[in-house]
Length: 118
Image (cartoon, rainbow, N blue to C red; front, side, top):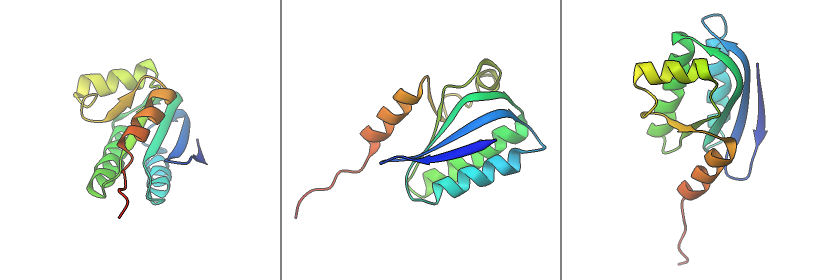
């Protein structure tokens, strides 16, 4: 269902298939584990064909936990059915949603903290 790749500024988690009550806990665990690296997480959802309310709850839980810790969860390339669920629940504007993986990566690089020389 998921595979992780570590990028320079983020962790990329690719999600494939349907996310429902039978596997949403696995998605939440995988996203949580990716988040523990201390970097933003990009969820490539181009292969996720279905999302139910339990999957949505998993995404929300990870999003809220990441925000509390000063990090972020970015969702990229949502397919029509999951995108519709985010739209009708009003969460499309609450979550970091990007039309492409390229846009998600660009958003993370602009959010990266800058350090000033001392």
